[in-house]
Image (cartoon, rainbow, N blue to C red; front, top):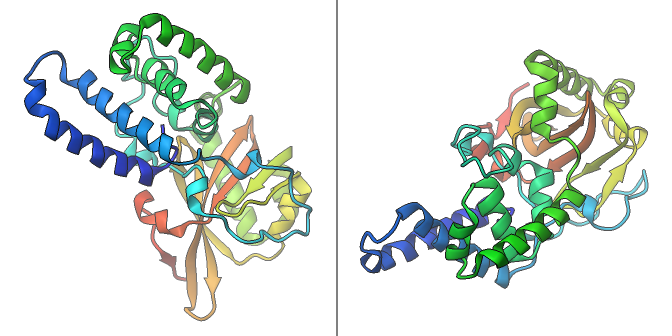
Length: 298
């Protein structure tokens, strides 16, 4: 709903507090799970009413020129944030049969970004119906509206989301590649960047690949433009998983400390065997949430 792990944690605390205060009035009437989701949904709707929606840099303006520097970072609160796979916490396929999306698909960057463009109530309806698998009647009860209103909002939300989502989810892409194919891509990618092999990196990118570095607003498009960033090999990498997608942790050499310091968590979006999007979240403070060290020795 919120596109931010930090905002979601704040909302969870508020939802639990509201539930605790309202527990005497609940009194065991009805099912606990829909009641808790109703509270959590209302907390999220209240939060969305207070602040602007989150986006990815590639959804703002035109790509930067090849020699443009990133500029000044914007407030982190305007960007979609990465989500650690280990915190999904539930196996694929847990939702009711009515759900369209598996849990891992529902945290992919493209899906999260598409949701941010929906009006808040449409966003809630889409998540409750297509991710969590609640029935239209249950959603209507949670949102204090009618089944007809829920169905109408769901049709509009699906249409808007489908216009922004790729034809194939990252989960489908990863399954088609198989574990060995995925490991090979990760290994070649990290090795090429560590060696500063511009040609090898370019060969792995889609022709119209994009590269972004939130909280910086500028972003770049084109395999040659992006590969040129590797000309100075000053990084080390560790594999990671974020948003149900391939990811890596980038560490930049710090001569004063004499070691590699956490710099960015980069989430990769594949198109077949090529890398279509590279979103490097320049927020090393998230590393502990992904079980990543803050620094690497030589």
